[in-house]
Amino acid sequence: MNQDLIIRRYLPSDEDVVVDLWSNAAREAHPFLVGEGTGDREQKMREVYLIQADNWVAEHNSEVVGLLGMIGSEIGGLFVAPASQRLGVGRALVEHATTMHDEVTLEVYTLNDRARRFYALMEFEEEGRRLDAETNHELITLRRTARDSSVTRP
Image (tube, rainbow, N blue to C red):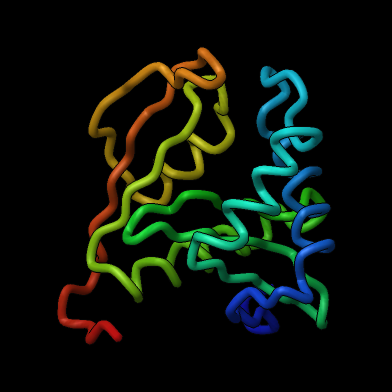
């Protein structure tokens, strides 16, 4: 899929499709979070994250299949449509993040085994752990340094 994948900036007109993608992917990734992908969490996605983060979408055949939300050099969110997972979309979005920043960090729920395996394959290293006050679940802080430090950053 990578050769047909386009990564572009999020546009306000993407809101509904992106929120639907996020909701489906988040519910699948976080079944341990009550109300994930709905209600207050959806409202926060629309009113905070899609406005304040530097958001990018991955498109395949003109369909949005992934979302990358950057807060500075932190990956605040990485979500791939369930039907497009394991096809290189997440990898392409992480690589895109590292073209913008020499080093990126993120937090992942300890209970999200699939994402933790993905980030290990992407050469992220654990930096620490903390309890998320909002959900009362443990988060792991991960860090990845860009592979080629000679790449010119925008």
